[in-house]
Length: 256
Image (cartoon, rainbow, N blue to C red; front, side, top):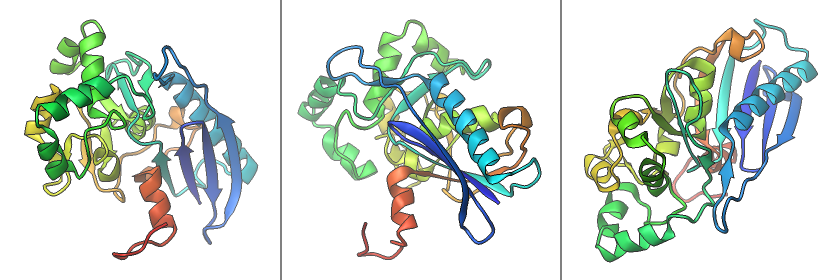
């Protein structure tokens, strides 16, 4: 059997699938939305983590799954939302800044006026917009006291929601290419964090996760993190790319 975690903007859903890929257990929990100022949107990373664990437990109970019954785990997630945490303690260093957040709109306009959009688009396929992760990370580095020094010395880890959950489940600091491609920091042709973009946004590469493909072994879950289950985390994809694949859109010209 397989456990699937879908961590979305407004809630978290977990599903258990049997050997015929039929759903046999499910659970859902809503997620609190925080609006500290007009146009600002934040989530509590610990609420995301604790809610995910709780919902996973409810889905496993619904399916009658015991430790040892599961073969693998997969994650799909809201994209572009940024978390930052202490890699030693696993504690968040700020609330997560959600993809909807517009606090860096002026910064994006400034970067466009400086002529940086051509470089960004050539490397990432994206436009300069606060929707994406890079200016959120830049904002955190500039506004959270001591964070830049922590990031430069390896005492702060950045990541999208998939990275946060992977770290809490396995202790590994990883992401997949679909999530990395939505950060404005990832060269989609070269398949790596781009040095010029990292310099442009002032992001230390050592604070970012290692990028794997979407279907790869991301580590083994710690039993104490997932209701006694130790299993391989074998699939990670941003929600829209995951849905595209789920609709069998695997050829050029197909869409959902």
